[in-house]
Image: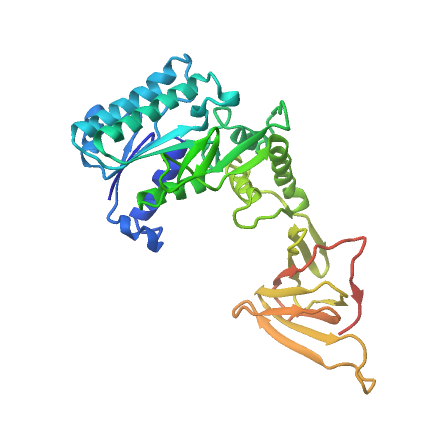
Length: 407
């Protein structure tokens, strides 16, 4: 398939083009995209000549028109940038008799509803939509018109047309920012969800809809297209989450990152805005003559991850827990892990000790069950032992749930 992407160097275009290249080059091997191979990508932007654009229009099997003007010096440039280029693009396709599907990146502002009433940008986008629908009626070529809400994700330009990008950049890099009204709610569309939809459109799997004001109404025969996975979030909530992401470098907290959640998408976005050289931060290691213990991550509902270093010949542990349980994974060195059930058996004897000899060469997870005292010994007399530890709950100094007892 031969795919033309206009506005290829913009926020949406860049993300789409990189995803297409991954498919073309065999890096994205998902079966659903095999139908697109062999894949040729035509990238069009401001530096593309009319001769090149004409050639692309003569050969393309699908066109993504992502080119447009967002913040011109003169509002009159909205119409020229958004309507004018679309006219040129469709004119070249018609000139070459190419009736391939064409996608248009429009905007929710084209509704001219509510706060978008009288928007020069919205009027230019609406004119572009009408142009595409007229082109389809005249030529029979399929058109896919998407009205994008507020977009966010990696590579989105701060202080341009995305509040999320502006807040991400400011909070990640300690720059000043202002929130005029924290109660204002935005409809947000994550760039990866948008790209997934566009790749689906290449396969004829776009989501069709009609519009009732700003609200898409799904319909298999709808005039428009939409991405069904959006979130409605207040500005105050966005900023609070971003501030918590920044604090996580100190408190090691991790929020809900379940698949599809807004917090998961927003944190991925936030991480992409750190200035180069700002992606490393120190952890606080608890060090004594036995080695060190360093917390790495902690969550409210998924426990805590730590790294334990034991000096040669050192034994650590010899304690048990009521409810807390842990998983030990030795990653470097060789260890003896010993566990014994607390208390006495029916004969009044200590319960037997279970022993596990493990090493980083053959990864084995050993579980420290509640009610079992346990210890870990570094069997080397020369090298440190490094163990990755996951606990089902973060350590709480007010309720440590840790009780000394020799194994």
